Length: 146
Image 1 (cartoon, rainbow, N blue to C red):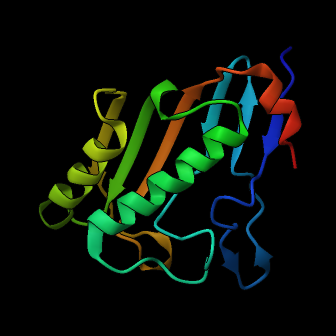
Image 2: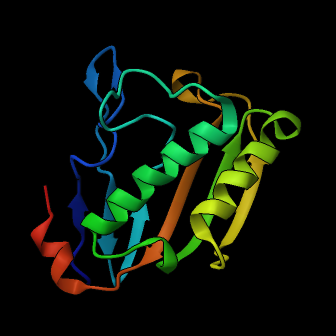
């Protein structure tokens, strides 16, 4: 059986607080050469108490900064993202802003993805991004474990 590593990084938003304290999850888990990220919303690492303002574009940009920071801590980067699931509160309202930020972040890389509208997201977010990526550097995984 493959070893599973749980990774947190101070360079991404902190776990969202609930009435009972911090939610019990890691930024990502790593096993068998794959990185499974927890869903990321537009919470800045510098102030994880409020979603960034500016709609889907700003939230997607911030969420992808968190994704990139988590991937770096796990020994990877955006170019090694294999698949994403993107949850939008309102496809009609949010898709264009999301898509603009997505294209800016991923450039020519096109991971497999699914974009869907859902009924609600935590903290009033309009975008949440979940990713799976490949590890590109085994040494980084062990040096950033929390």
